[in-house]
Amino acid sequence: MGIDALDARLITLLAQEPRLGVLECSRRLGVARGTVQARLDRLRDREVIRGFGPQVDPAALGYPVTAFATLEIRQGQGPDVRRHLAAVPEVLEVHTTTGHGDMLCRMVARSNADLQRVIDRVVDFAGIVRASTAIAMENPVPYRVLPLVQQAAD
Image 1 (cartoon, rainbow, N blue to C red):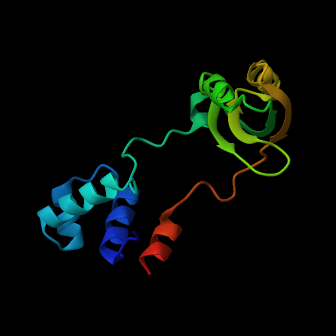
Image 2: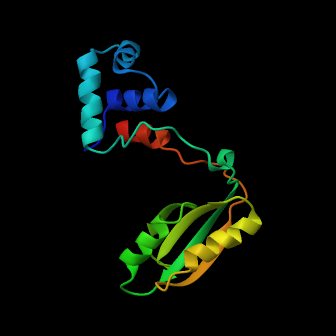
């Protein structure tokens, strides 16, 4: 269930200019409007494209500190821990993992001192046994998918 070159071109175009309409996409890609609409519908149905919302920079909102916490959780507490973490606004994402910890949590804070408050809120739950936190210094390769899109179309 891969993508082809036209899908890749469409995804790239929308990633670069997310506010483009279907008609303008069809004009720039040199294909019929119906083709673009059908491709978009198919890509959304398959969840290749998950949304068209704005990309928000937490630092611009006043949360310049990013940290990653490896969480060890009590067995059988996964669903409760997930609900707890989802209720903490500073928790941006959580992944379940293999290895030393059970979950990897990306969080933001207003300052290093504020990070302690966020960590305290995260670990203030009976299902979390231990947390190990690392502060991100910089982000030299931000989250990206376009190189993967290009590779998937090859």
